[in-house]
Length: 368
Image (cartoon, rainbow, N blue to C red):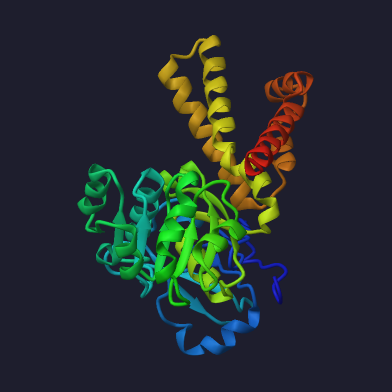
């Protein structure tokens, strides 16, 4: 981060979070104080009028992992120029809303992933239900959108006309047909965001026409609980401003990183397929607990929460997983005995081979 290397708050313990999308955010715990690491320290100088006002940092809930009953305030000081102090505010238990984007958002395809995105955007205050549109061949799916205040339309062309940002959330085999049908309406005032797996930006640009602005996003299924790990890349016509808007949208439902499209098969193998690996891990941990004598419901609850807690420690401390693992393993203790058995069984190589196999398969499918 330009201009920011290390921050200490009141000499207390701190947790440091690196978020690789948009701007890195640092969360420091110490006497009720948080630290925001801006991508460019100089940006604050142009916002002096805002420094004492209430402000909600992007992805606040995702950073902290739970809703807060306090509002953050930014202020400058010589010692801690990027400090945010959390102060009590009226309406305890309420969350300060995000700044609503002006864009109207449409969904071509109203499946579970589209629903998760739309619900997440509206729940986080990034847009209002009245500015969300959808269409889907399945009337019941359109009804789901209408339940939370979105407007269901009869055709994809209507969604394109009504919306500024159009999420293409159909099955991969239908993407090019949808874009060809919409191409006449796709000028530089429209932004297309595809969440369809395996359909490349050049393929979509060829179908959508020369003026279409396209961004490809690869979310994963934890989007359904507003905890997605997503990647994004832009087409030739999309601008940095377009990327910023999509980044802000997606950050409201999890974490998003930007990478070259040639790496998307690797992204698929890690974050796209990754939830299945972790579900299997949770199941195996729970089965081990049952084998050791725990009731299954207790074993499952402990296993799932352990994985969730361990992941949060990696994200929020910024420490290498190996460091955190070593901290749990006392000499001649129970944990190192278990870790030794996992190493003997080749757990690391098994996970690495699984990721490589998934990436290779994604590469094969993209060439079909």
